[in-house]
Structures are given as structure tokens and as C-alpha cells.
Length: 272
Image (cartoon, rainbow, N blue to C red):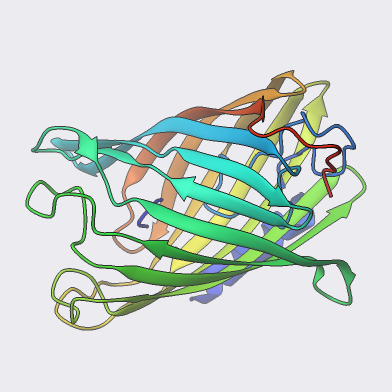
């Protein structure tokens, strides 16, 4: 999970929404078709088909300073556990600029799709999650806190364009010594097909300022790059993250989304 407003930020969000979200197989009837949440910070309101497993992974290179670079491998296992429920397990590998790579803070979340045609919100889901202090604080791979988060997700499709809007809040243990006790996030993710299996993803996201001993200035950033569907069950992506405001590092990323198939037998399963 990445640890990344102002009139400028609102203007960028508006422009993105007018443009277009990454294409996904959310509307497909094939349970083996991928439903990518990569490469954006945002997620969509869709859920993986019951009994099926989808894997998202990649690598991100953050330039912390001119002579400091960190790497991360954000991996998510997505299990369809019900018609409107998806269990997500976050297993990040982190390689800070000055220490060895290792496991970061593991998290578990349950996405619950509450409706597909809700007025204004359209397809709407909530994603409560818990992050555990599994990463080393001294090595820079964790925050030494237990986090409880709640993310609100609104998705819609306009023609061949999909739009995902997220807003979330996180509350942490630790008294704010190593990480803020409370933080928030907002995202506006859009995208569109270019030609055949080639598409484009774009997002504006922000982390408002936090307070306390570990408080930080707010950040606003853009993420954008191409996506390519190799098979209905496999897509790849690449792109850049460009800071607009605050201490957000410049970054490059690449990754993939793979629907690995059934993880338990079922009499029948549905994508929606």
C-alpha cells in the first residue's frame, strides 16, 4: 500500500473525470476475467467472482532524494468469498534506501459491495481493513502500529470509460510517535481504451496534512501510464507518479494482474 486541497488539486480531479478510469472486466460475465485495481492508488467497487483468486503485484521505484531510491513490491491476493464480498490480503515487500528488503506491514481487508445502481453513488462498496505491525520499524519497513481503515468506493461506467472515486480514513495505535494517529486519503481514478487491448490509466490522489509528532504536510500527485491486456485473465501496466504538491516522491512503476483461477470448487460463481 502506498504511503503518499488546494484549488490546483480540485482542478486536476475535474479534468481527469472529464477525460476518462482504467478499463476492467468488471462488467464481464466470465469469472476468469481480471478486474484490475492496479495500477492506481484507488480501488473499484467490483468484487472477484465467488471461489476465484486474483493476484495483483508489481514493483515501484521511489526517488526519495537525488541520491536516495527505495523499492517496493506491493502484492495483493483477492479472494472472492461471496457474491458481493472480496477478501483482500496485502503482502508488501519493501526495500528502503538504506536497508535490506523485507516484508512490510501486512494488511487484511473485506470489500463489501452494497449496491450496483445506488442514486448518485452508482456502484458503491466499503472496504474496512486492518494493518498489522509486521514490518521492521528500525529497518524502515513498517510503522510499528496497528491500523484500522475504512474506505468508501464509488464506481461508474460511461460508455467505454470507467470512473472510480475513493475517500478513506485510517486510525492508528502508537500515540502518533511513529505514524499519525489519524490520516485520510482521497482519489479520483479514470481511464479509457486506446486500441484493442491497449488502454490508459490516470489518477489524481491526495493525502491531506496530518498532525502530531509524526505529522506531515499534505500531498497531491498524479499517476498515469498504459495498460495492456495480454489475455482476458492477465493484464500488465507501467507508468509514473508525479508530485503536484507536498513531500510526494517521484516514482516509476510496473506490474501485472492475474486471475489465477478457482481456489475452491463451487457449484456456480458470478462476477457480480
